[in-house]
Image (cartoon, rainbow, N blue to C red):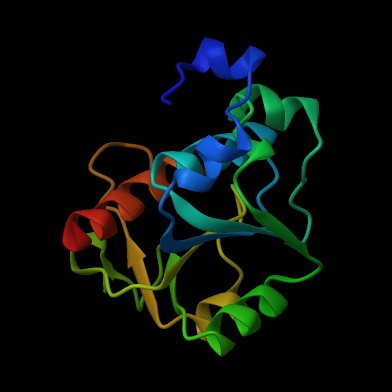
Length: 174
């Protein structure tokens, strides 16, 4: 059953409905993302693309949190997530399970998101709103991609960036 945002705020899908969703082996890794609106929106995005899991790392807040809930419109109640003290721990686990790690960051090594390696399974790493993805994490990534910034601003918010990259990966796999 598909629910609209106002329905999600006041109701939850049944466990049976959640279990029917075919998960796609996409993982989101939040590296010290601080804004609870971004975190909640990531849960909503993870539900939209049927992602396998979200990894909340470092200083990233985790549910239950009323501000995350407001942006997530309840999706944090059925999207799987794990918390790790460090992002390195999350990436080590993902790599040990054969998951390719793609960091989204402006860096000398980055390439256009248009050329993202869409081979599944894949983890998309997003960083701190001001500092970006930590340099140690970038060195652990299999690929670094960035979005073109054509206006005056040099960045897009975390969930918006994640959405562009995730849908580009889905486009290549469906």
